[in-house]
Image 1 (cartoon, helix red, strand yellow):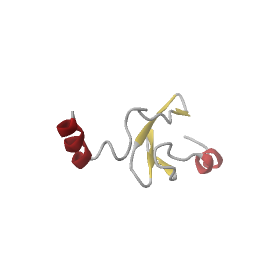
Image 2: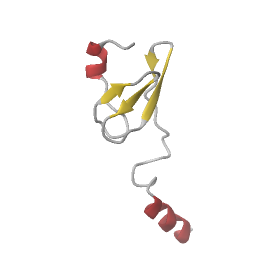
Image 3: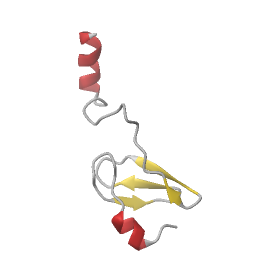
Length: 67
């Protein structure tokens, strides 16, 4: 379990919203991205090649047709 003081300091690295603790992970309250907790340490990592805009189905079709 993560202390409430630490949880209040943490934000989602993807969209900068608050996160909430679930059983084995933290979840962003806005974009719902999930971050694992390993050995009591939240791993707030996001794939650097993925952005919110690139991951939308509409933009994936556009990128494929331009290639």
